[in-house]
Length: 174
Picture (cartoon, one colour):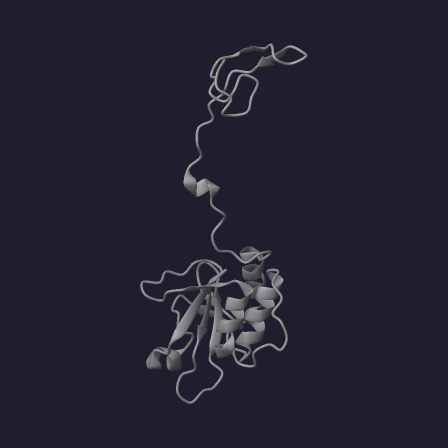
């Protein structure tokens, strides 16, 4: 009889199929089946992602709300889009758009390096203000253009002052 180093009717070292005569009833030991190993990647938990957040719902909301020209309310419009996506921005909310970075991080958004950055649908950019302004800007990428309270285009900078000063910004991905 095989050595019982592993559990089973015929011991762990057994690769044979047969009947276990050591029990009160006759049990047929099934032949072992070989299950191919899954790649390690499949065993890992999904990377990133904000629990309960729908990029599609957020983008749909920001697109539906956007105007053709700035309303001076980018923080409100993007916040409402994030909340439409399923994530509540806790009170007290930042007053200025430039201050949303730490809030997004706490909510589970991942900071994306700006070096060789390529926008992805749902990305949110928090821009610091150009000279002469205090609020800064926040915007969401809808898969084709940057949108906040207005549709901006494909350039990451929402206007000439931002572009001229090449203000610093942070990118956050859900």
